[in-house]
Amino acid sequence: MNIQFDEVIERRGTNSMKWDMTKQRFGEENLLPMWVADMDFRAPKEVLDALHATVEHGIFGYPAHSKTVDQAVQSWLSRRYNWSVEADSLIYTSGIVPTISHIIQAFTEPGEDVIIQTPVYYPFYDVVKKNNRELIKNPLSFDGDHYNIDFNQLESVITDHTKMLVLCHPHNPVGRVWKRDELEKLAEICQKHNLFVVSDEIHADLLFKGQKHIPFASISEDAAARTFTCLAPSKTFNLAGIQTSYVVVENQQLRRKLTNHLANSFANSVNSFAEVATEAAYTHGEPWLEQLMTYVEANYDFVREYISLNMPKLRVMDSEGTYLLWLECSNLPLSASERKKWLIEEAKVALNHGPIFGDEGKDFERINLACPRGTLKQGLDQMKEAYNKRGF
Image (cartoon, rainbow, N blue to C red; front, side):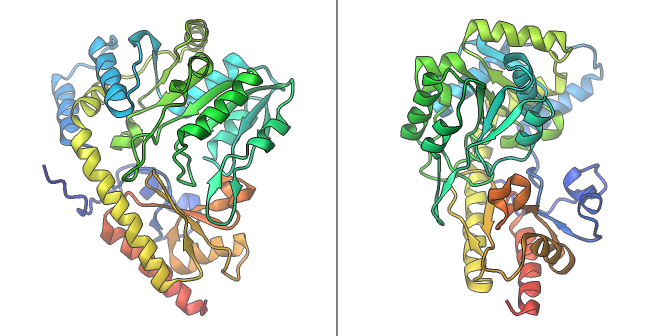
């Protein structure tokens, strides 16, 4: 199977947030969108075939959950991560951010502390604050080249009011794939202070060569007992619009409480397309995924070389996974707001502006690599022209 990721597929006029809402989000016409984290690639053929069969049947009544979906998920977790999960531990939801919100509501009280590790996926801020919980930051340590968890700072901010840590694993936007020793140290701290852990592992399948994802809950029995592992095929197979995700909760008591909370919130059902897509993706999508990540990693290498040769005041940060590139811009003679304006008005590209990920992102921009090489080159060429016009 040879998949043509170089094919440019027109997405304008398809109700695409990435392509049809760029003017609304960025305030300018004719920007090249390289921001929100979905791909400009078709989902695997087997997923499309399964969805077509569902449409052809023509009846879209209330769905019943199928055990074959559980089996597909269990097989995927076992094959990819050597993680054995009981079917009873799976709770299906419509998206990871809503799931995190429900977990926060069910297991913390208003005013209690929830820790996030910044710079981080920006909805983490809102999902804490809008639930009236106290947001506590544990910024990643950054030595100018590499990001690590600051364990000393983490312990210093934990109090009797601290109830939960939200882990981004692999980490968006910095591209770290947390290693076993890091996860073990984090698990020890969470056990010591009796913290619930919400581990957002939506990028777990999107790893560069030589990297290995280790589910946080698999670290120890205690980690399994306190962790809500949020996963989805949506990021992996470009299915975000179908709104399919699931959470692994191995602790029966916690699982029962979360299940009851979702039922009481009338958030305990998913659509039939989600189940069909999930089963097909996890059953047949692995070859597609392997080719995807080969292409994405080649895109990463292409951007790194292009920027080094043509825009040397910018710097591509090392990455271990995801299809999101973290671009360091501190050597440009521009403030963060000036840089944002320059990219939009002069380079005509729409990137995710670093400060939305937290104060620690002020010197950075995030670029989506999950697009055809030609699209990526077009964006870089536009940036290069704007860069040269300014005489940077």
